[in-house]
Length: 389
Image (tube, rainbow, N blue to C red; front, side, top):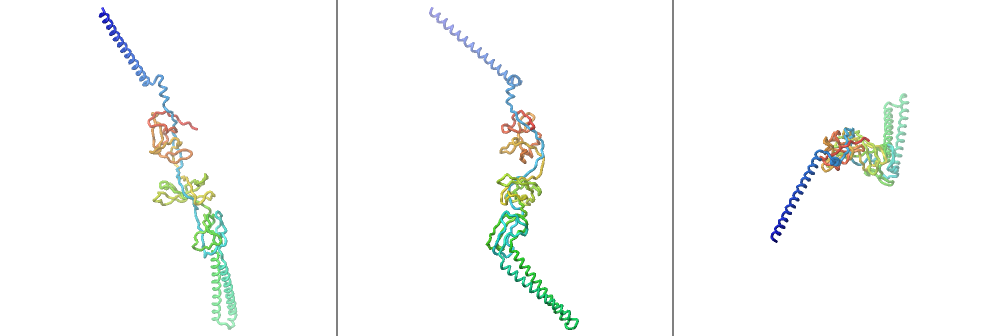
């Protein structure tokens, strides 16, 4: 009896385990079917572009501002730096014998006329020499006057037979010699006066006194060097150091804007000479830019210059559109598929109007004008035209 009861109980346990395993298999099968259905629905929605997920995908595409600038007329310019100097620098020194300076009549910054006395040298000895020669002129003239009177009296007596023709010739020669001595004395006097006048240090032309290197009491002579420096007519120039490639584009007459260091003042000038040679060490040449006198333009100072060497047509972009990296300058354009493409460009003149691009684009492309730093080539974007301001 007990044996039968135990068998029946064990059979019930076996049946219950088989039912549990069957239910578990059914639950797993149902879960797998549900997962497959969900995955298939998601794939169908994504491929069809419908349903509620489509707006979310569209919202992730960035909107970028694009512009097609076309071609604009832009000035071709060359920038350089250099030193300021007098356009015609005139050194003034001792012309005559020299001596002790008694007076200096000008200061740096003074305007002077051609021939104006800048400094006076002591001349007491030369003055006495002039007086001596002047007296000799008077003596020679008196001798010439006496010789002329004697000749005139001899000619009056020759008709009476008291004076021979030979005497007349002799007296005529005496008179001519006396006149010649007068001329020699006059020439010697003029020479001494000229020598004395050369003791004055004079301005060779109209201009501006730049420097002074002489004081009263100083002994000067022909070896004293430069006592004054002048700028003829006050004209200045900039000796601009220009790169070899840019030098070939410059011509005399090109306009230029010069900005001296230490200020914001700008002065208009013109190229008046382009160096025919290039320094083999620096690969640079000199462009000389003529400038009118301005108090802010000081010889020896430093300045920058922008020279307009011509004009041409090029796309003009805002500075935000042009990017740069170790490979060079570039812009992003949006192609027909609304994908971003990198385009390498060469940058020309940069001005307040924008950046001129000399090569790489035509200006008819859809060029990204902002936010280019956040884009990558091949990225999908939504282009939006730049609104005219």
